[in-house]
Length: 437
Image (cartoon, rainbow, N blue to C red; front, side, top):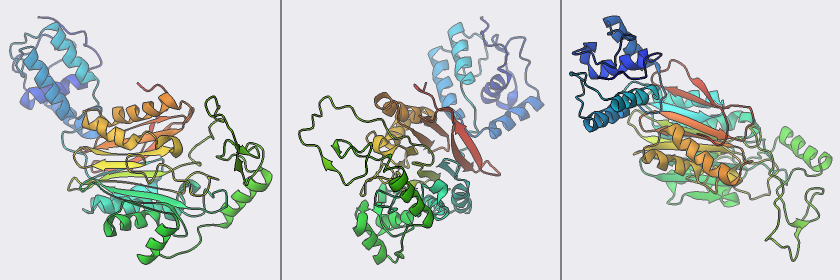
């Protein structure tokens, strides 16, 4: 009989394992690896374990996953679940302790309903949660939650009066996705209608299409009863005037044109006989929470139905007609009842090329935790575009969540969570570094 190397600082983990595999915390036969540094748990210890399990709301794997892993492991090593003979080999003991130590345990009960959203858009999360806690639908929570950000002009990058394009006009992109039906509704470059998320919901529910764009999306919205009005405000107009007259249209998104877009405003025309083979792309425009800063949201309701959505006014001073990642299914957001959901925020022109939300969901389908899935999606982009800025949040069907980010320098990426175990919303943060391990 061999003692494991894991003898200190693992009391709570070991107690959790004992409570799981020794019903009622009654030790049938004390295993040798449960050495003198760990005393047999008392009734008070059992209660402490249960409280600890209820306390945590995020994990690398839920406790049930570890239960299954441990079952498999004990079968491989021909050890009974209760370890009644205490005859565990060194490899088995170390592996069990390693698996247990790497987990942040949650209750085996699912943490649903739950809502999670990008950045620190607290009011949107509260609005969505109030719908979920009353038994409302996840799709309603997504629409109403993102609509609050549109109304409150979150960070100036969601809703009317922000991120004017080159012609000084604000346009909106939004997406809603139903993970139960796999149906999608989205609008892009929506003009003169403030409630983009709600228009996207109407696309989902009143058409057989998935995306409507531009002026004709506006025409559809008016047909559906939405009010048409300017999205320009005095603040967005001042922003554009400064960019055009004082900053000489810097930065902008043109390349390979004349006059030189790094020095002059347009109109531009293409450079004839431009050789693209060895053409060096200009430095990427710096993106941050104020440019550009989508609200992305994922929700699971009491029935277990998952929905996801986004809303944004896009990149500042974009070329008119530009569409970013937010309204693209699988890029801005994605949801599947059988797995979970994900949403992304950041440099949309780059991120949409990699469908990070879809990738994160597929990674969870393959068994990755939400945090691991988000890291995979971010790493995929950073491998090709190491200077990009962005983040992905992911939520699995059991209410376990995680996030990853890149390109925010020393600033952590915040996101907001509220679930059935919480009295109040919680702002989580994740540090950005690359490569993410």
